[in-house]
Length: 294
Image (cartoon, rainbow, N blue to C red; front, side):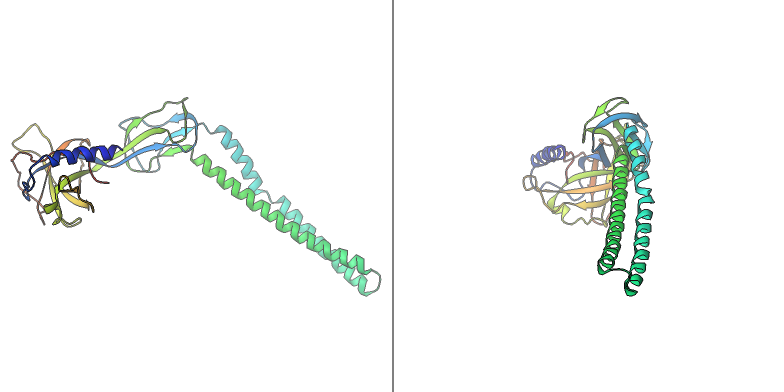
């Protein structure tokens, strides 16, 4: 919904410009975006036990951010682990099977000698069959207990929220002791190096630009208007569907951001086929746009 609204506003501004007024190297106003923006939630309700990070803190992939109260689940997991690792019932079933096989051999010998009846022989054979099935059932039950243990372990792991990316904590929306619902927004983690810029480019120019080959010049805001900082960015995505109202196509530019400039800045982007560098362009902006693209 948020992306669609930004796209609508961007296209509305572009549509207001005279058609066919775009030059190949004109500066187009756009807004920088995080290259990763994750709003994380728990998939089950619970009470927050621990918050390990603060807004602005750098985090790594797999780092624990927040943990729910999992004391009861840990106790249950220990019980399931003990059941899953229990081998007593299987060994008892194996011993029972071995005993019935020994008894069967004795009955078979006695039957040959005429001491055991046919009924006794049939019973001995049936005992072996029952013992074999009992062993199979015991092993099946054991495998089910192991699955329950693995499932409980997965559920316990889901009570730990870890960072899916290297980035920075933007917002923390809970405190220890608060209850959370499933899928409730808990924390936002973003990555601003590199930055993305989604630019609505005139279709006639966009058709000539190739992701992975052509570059763009991104001009960042500065107090020194005479020397605006410029960075060469790479085109990483070109939309497949143009906006007919504004005659534009979304081009996504990725630009390195080692200085950790914040996302959301207004920048000016210029394109030229095959260009890898450009001198500063001091002409005024022609197009204003917000976020567009998928």
